Length: 391
Ligand SMILES: Cc1ncc(COP(=O)(O)O)c(C=O)c1O
Image (tube, rainbow, N blue to C red; front, side, top):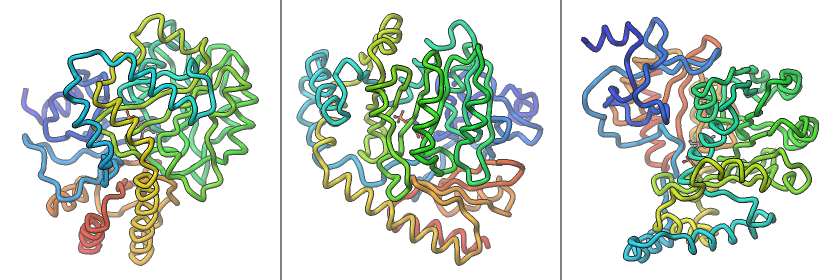
């Protein structure tokens, strides 16, 4: 079928979008994309993602600002660890995995049996969705939010209760609490949230977690927590010591700079972890080299501090320029910024790409928004120049 016809028919699949390496529906690579009449991906009741024009080859980007990656990583220590450990790649890494888990357990202040590792936190988001919704039920989350867990939950038949974010883009915890009913099998919170970059107050989130009935797990995705300096929010990890239904996800993809090396974990009660262990191979998916990279990265405090400092510096530069150009961005506590644009989404993406800049464009609440990840200062200068030329 001709590509345009495929698009119109709504049968276009992620697998067929060879030119869109950054767009993924995880497990749904061969599933038809839910498209609206204009060919935008329907992400949620409030969100559509605008796709760039179709082409066979991915563009050669000078500034890859479309996946919230760390432009400085992996750290030199992590690279060295990968290089040195590759020679032992013929062995399963059980012992090394347990050593890494023990290291994380000290960092998080919980016993080792509260930790499950995965090749990226995506793996665990998906596993949790599968074990939670095998027998149906509903999932409560914000809208907009990060869709990985929600997508898999819906694929295994969950109903999604999408609760619009508040005016300030924080989670509407009151409405989320009210939405929980006898069929709710999980609440998903992303704090700081993607794609908005906004935070929900640590104090309010803590009260919310304590108010949710023990029978309903609350999954708090803290992928960007280390970058949320000065935000007034905080990790919910310590709640796990007193409340069994809290699950916290962390990743090595952001502040540690290991997105392509794939390491993440959840902290949860041993009871919850054993539910995942019963039907999956738990941490089996992590490569020997990735375990070494993660271990080395945890010790490289200087690299993490440099990442946080540069991210804040670059974000200040970008937001200062957005201010000057009159764009009203959402205050960001992450390594990306979401701001409304007036140029039509496809043209915006094409103009950015023509200068080698890759960003994402969403429609949220009827407005078109650009989500730009923080790259190096040089990359952001190119982004700002390109945006200025468009304004
Ligand atoms: C909120 C959030 N959670 C989880 C992930 C997945 O991260 P990974 O699978 O690389 O650990 C991402 C990736 O961008 C994210 O934004």
